[in-house]
Amino acid sequence: AVIEQALRSADLETEFSLVYQPIMDVVEQRVDAYEALARWTSPTIGKVSPGDFIVVAERSGLIRDVTRALLRKALADMAAWPMEVSLSFNLSAHDIASSACRADIKDIVRESGVAPDRIIFELTETGLMRDLVDARDALSELKGLGVRIALDDFGTGYSSLSYVHKLPITRLKIDRSFVTSICEDQASLNIIRAIIDLARNLGFSCVIEGVETTDQMLLLRSAGCRFMQGYLFQKPLPREEIEALSGVAA
Ligand code: G
Ligand code: G
Ligand code: NA
Ligand code: MN
Image (cartoon, rainbow, N blue to C red):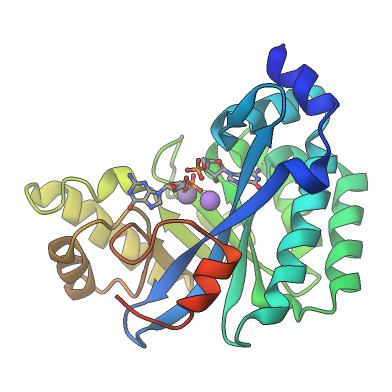
């Protein structure tokens, strides 16, 4: 209730900001995309993590305003990036469930002038699974803009390998919980290998999240993983800092 109150009276332009974390292409040794991650510092309750405020924004219906403000900001930030670097932007399942919100998103993308194929919208598996048919139609509508769609935190929810091909997605992001144990535990690596194979067969790209050590990176690269994200490469950083590092591989 305290978070909701602060969110209702929040100035979205000044209290909210974005940090960016690179998704690396370890084959071409370059930045593939920057993922935008929201940060909120409220004058009344201080820092609130997205894990806490996104659910409140969803429940209270404020998510539409938050998403609009953040997407505008991220697309404006892209003006300073090299053309080959994409934006990966998190959307809530609530955002795409509303046709008004989908219309907002489409308008904002068109007005930004950014080439749609440089935009990747990330949606979590758990959010989409609540209604697969609606999710499929909503995602198809967005994809009609020319943007790409990533399934985030893959492997955590009701992860069914049988439904991913029914969604118009282009990328899987494998949840970081799988990476933690790959160096000790053959089973985790085998699971990642199986997901990479699945992704390849379906024509998706595959990002491994939460890569923290060189050993993990080398093992994943030999398992055929091309796109990686994690503290080994870069933690999420404000725009100015990430741009200063642009194109620099680990
Ligand atoms: O940055 P951090 O690890 O605290 O992010 C926690 C979670 O919040 C992540 O799962 C991330 O996908 C989600 N998140 C971060 N920024 C946004 C945003 O702008 N919109 C939505 N819907 N989720 C976000
Ligand atoms: O749900 P989503 O995958 O979007 O969550 C992204 C969150 O994961 C960000 O808040 C970011 O801070 C965190 N994160 C990114 N890289 C790493 C990593 O290598 N290790 C850990 N533990 N967390 C990470
Ligand atoms: Na994400
Ligand atoms: Mn994720």
